[in-house]
Amino acid sequence: MMQAPPPVARSTVNYQIPDITLVRSDGARVNFAHELEDGRPVLLDFIYTTCTTICPVLSQTFAEVQKRLGNDAAKVKMVSVSIDPEEDTPARLSEYARRFGAGAQWSFYTGSVQSSVAVQRAFDVYRGDKMNHSPVTLFRATPGQAWVRLDGFATPDALLGEVRTQVARK
Image 1 (cartoon, one colour):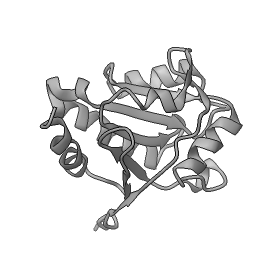
Image 2 (image 1 turned 180 degrees about the vertical axis):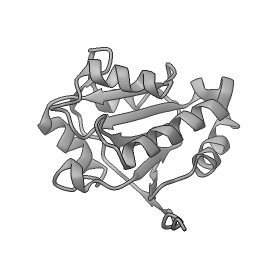
Image 3 (image 1 turned 60 degrees about the vertical axis):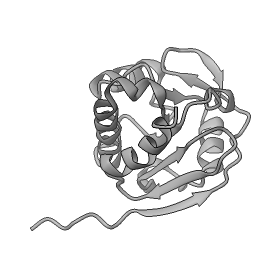
């Protein structure tokens, strides 16, 4: 019999987004903080493309949220940051995005090891190396607001519950 995943722990945290350059999957070098400040609610996770355990589940959850949002998907910025920038080139991230049917509102980022670690540390998800990572999804309704941190495998329903309250206000 399969064990149920542990419950998701929900907390609210103020994070300072580092003023750092990352590389989007289309090859553009961008200021990460500016990428998150376009006014839309943000869903954020940390993945790597060769992961066979946690990351495919997180990415499938994002894909399901995107699908269920339908036409409202464009009202939410979805962000996946690689924790394996040495392997995850923009081309590899683009292929990964295609595998999960990522729409235009879902962006993937890589960069130098230093910039990846800095972003992971800023969101308190850095665990020393990619093999020690744990499932975390973050949500922020608007720029300047605190982030909702969901530790564990948040379901599409849980993420939609966070997102829909904000999208309905737009």
